[in-house]
Length: 319
View 1 (cartoon, rainbow, N blue to C red):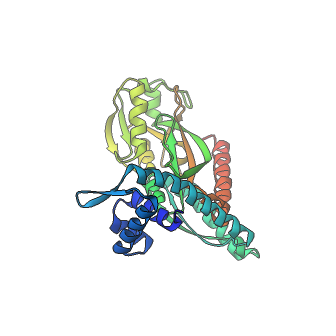
View 2: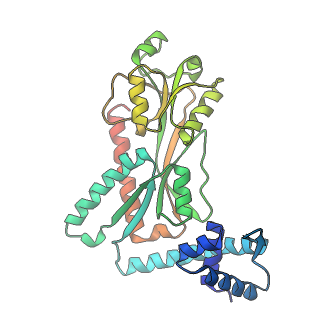
View 3: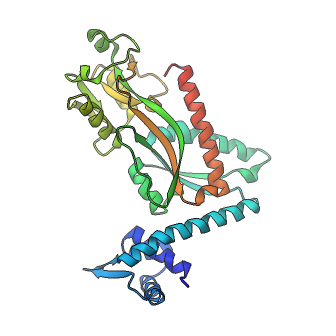
């Protein structure tokens, strides 16, 4: 019979890539990892790893076992979550990775709510958060490596994002991407306030974009490419508040997800829906089975409420 502990070691080796890294993550020594892998190979009767240069790589048999280990270990995580719920354990530490506008718009209100819960009678139902700000790609990698318990990420209609194997997702909200112009520029182009705009009309404009390392940058490249042009980029900043301020200063046009708009207007900005709409979906991702943990489940419920509140506020404001 296969030993679950050895399957977990093989899974960690697949995730971290080297024996040393897997050993560090599991708080074991490298020789202990190698010994357990050798024992697993004797149990299986086939090699599960092979040497390639100075590193170990999974054999096809090892990859097959990892695919089954993902399912088995997810089921065990779900069982542990159910037992914890039965015992009534709701308090815990949840490590969260979130991109900047989600950290500001969703995580901050949830954090405030948790502090309020902690002051009430039902302290046991509360939890503690640990936040790290990461773009969606690195956030999913941190989740895969078990550095965080929950990732708040996004994907665009023009740039879908795959959920890693062994993970599950829950949608929080969907928001439009809006064209941001200085009102004077909009007036010169004959664009009325709030008018739907074909991006092709902006082919000769200066553009303000996030940094090339972000998926938002790629979204803008694809949206403009679909409109038949390559944007002439004059400034890059991965802070959407900076981009909004530059638009208000008349520096150029920008595409901004609605949730990324700053709370306080940096100056005159004219916002416009797109003729060929682009939207951004925000969702949480957790490792399979862990979403049933009472603390992670509670956090998910609070994030759903924060997302609903954010959507309602923006709609009331006409965003």
